Image (cartoon, rainbow, N blue to C red; front, side, top):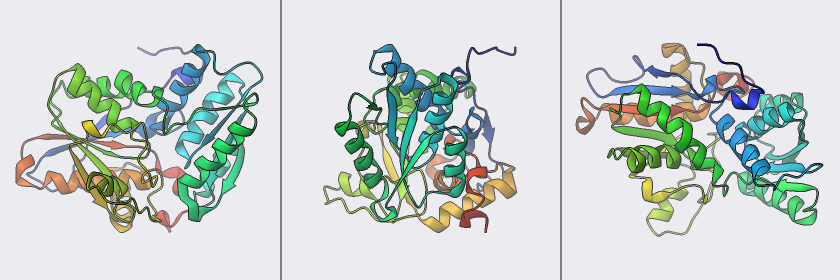
Length: 315
């Protein structure tokens, strides 16, 4: 039945789960992609964009006349921008200058102000800039902070997790998700493991060029590095990432991420971004291993490929 929503920020979720047939080896695990590019602003971050703003309004943190400021690598900014546009809320975003041209154009189309930060400083530089703006003018700016905000993983516990559980009739065995803020893997895992009581393997995906989660778990000094997988690998351990819920960490190279993003488009008809390719590379890797034979793997496909058309992904 078709629903009517009072504004576009309420139309998040209910994205399809699609079986992947050609990018995974035959005879192994069954792999399903959760196509988050079907959200209202075409990424998984639509969920947290709506949730963080709704939460700030409900708790009285976002007062009349205030402006939201937030660091973003693109998709969270776009999510916040569409919600802010729907609700008439001013928005300023800080973003590394290395993010795709499409991201910038989409943000400006939604009416957001954009402050570009040094690409060499990665997401940490964008975070520092946003924090400084909010600290210097707290009456004007509210920093939602996707890397710390509990509303981030909570929306995945409330929506994404139940959607996957319902679609698979509870038969999910493995969850594969790239980690940016960590909210997606944390919220989904919390729902399936804690609410439903199903023991699954939760697999976090990070760039091999910036493997800070692996370094942290090994007790090593964090040494983030530059990489090309936009949307994951922030270079630090976010507060929204619950490592107690993560069972395995898999690393992916830039080349693997690009290859599988292109393969998803050509072989599955799913126009996909780079982080989709990263997560799918891991899902395909696991699906061919004997220990996962006959199991059901769900991989999160965070966004659509349109916002990468000017990047070397499609060159």
